[in-house]
Amino acid sequence: MEKERHVLVVFPHPDDEAFGVSGTIHKHVLNGTGVTYACLTLGEMGRNMGIPPFATRESLPLIRKEELKAAAKVMGIEDLRMLGYRDKTVEFEDDELLAKRIHAIIEEVKPSLIITFYPGYSVHPDHDATGRAVVKAMALIPENERPKLHCIAFSRDCYEKLGEPDIHHDVKDVLDIKIATLKSHKSQTQLMAKEWEERIKNKDPEVLRRFGEEHFWTFQWQNHAPA
Image (cartoon, rainbow, N blue to C red; front, side):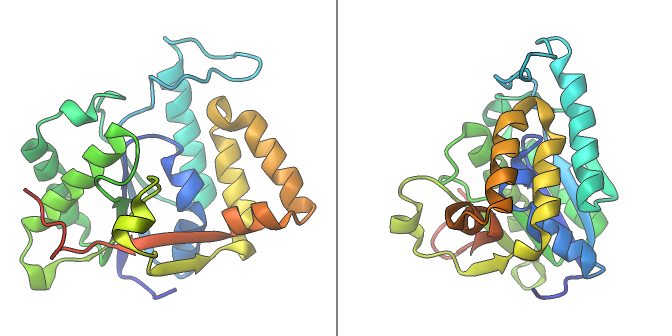
């Protein structure tokens, strides 16, 4: 993994980071790279309330806020930004205003790498809207000054349309951190994290492959320039 000056991670929901990039984030921290995580919402519209339920619709935002802070601590993130947008409404935000807010963070922290969702290939409308805003924010930066942009994609047609991911990180050596990050989001991942932890202990090859490798696409500006 290349050593970066600073990494900016931009996702819409608490736990987005846990599934796809927590191993990568922690390895950047181990490399001595500063990481800023900008999380747009508190995931207050999440369907899970814990098993057995320990959250209500009213208490879930506060619970998920604390879970997000715990997850950031596990990964070693010292700069966590909670931007205060409402869950499941990011797609309805003014694209230009959201892009300007993200651009302000980019200007402040001066990342050499940004990680987000690939717009159009990330299933959830909030995911796509977040990725789109990041792309628009980066378009405000002169091309020769832009940081690298690594994107997560998992729509059914992502391999067909984007080809194979071109960034591969082996994170098997930090799987304990990845599982601990997942477990931090207890209200959402309680049972599944326990199952995955057990299967990893038993060296289940499917789970080791799924969680021990993290893949990203380098954003292709020439093919997907923002509107």
